[in-house]
Length: 422
Image (cartoon, rainbow, N blue to C red; front, side):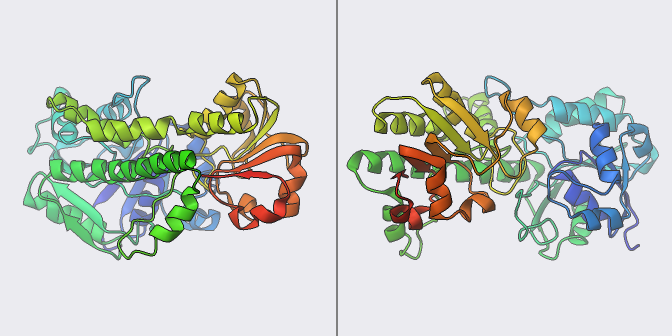
């Protein structure tokens, strides 16, 4: 094994697990997760997120543990825990703070380990918040530990831009740390590394990547609303606009997930701390967060304000990914119920028990019939493959099919039911 460092990855979710497996091919690596059930599942050779094939997981030399003490005395600690927002959309740093306290208790100062953060934060968190927590444990930065940052770029469900094929941005508190991270990350990705000018620059790069996407989608959502009032299909507009060589191919729709729907609030928080009012960032967030209610209100008006039986197809935050967390399909369900609809839900990839816990009802199995309103919310492969006959069978006479993701646009003339999309 060419790598001399012993590496501990803290957090084995969408980011940590693929990274830990890639590192384990080159270094002695252990992965820690506080969820004992998650660790048991991974030890059994199964990843519920669907990111890692069972065979690859079973064949890996990665050590898995839910016991922090098993990670004591490692050379490098890489923190990959979530960084969500709270109910007021303010950064919730508790997971990264908790992970930092855990790492502080595992450090052997004689090894002078490097602690690398991959979690999305705003500039200053690594060197101010995390460093302070480590020093509260009696450790001295530079003498007992060193800091680095390498923003995660995991795209759930994407089998092309995997961790071993993307450029890894790295940053360290000094040249020695930067050289170490270039060597470690360079050993696991064929695309190479990019040395950011500073840890703060690397933190900033991560937080603007998803904010940029959020703003671009918000523009498309605003365009969709305008075109709807103008009686023009937004998809027809996009078909024409995309013929221009430098037109960016963003689409309207629901914006959820752990990154695009969350990271802009970290950037906005930093702006407000510095006395700047982040108008564009928060305007984009407001547009995207209200899109679900706008869609349902539009459909309700199309039905003459008459509620009925509705079916929402797709509950996860992204196509072909089983994760229900922070999915904006919940906005559709909530608004439908507010308007008096009897709402059924379905999803071909989400865990049925998790659906029950999240929505308080069991998902229906397809085929299902007799709905006044059927909403295609997530472009899951099984839904995209549906034919006109299957679609029509779900909808009662006089009912409507709402195709948020334009999955069935090419079949709209064959379905024989009222069809709506942007």
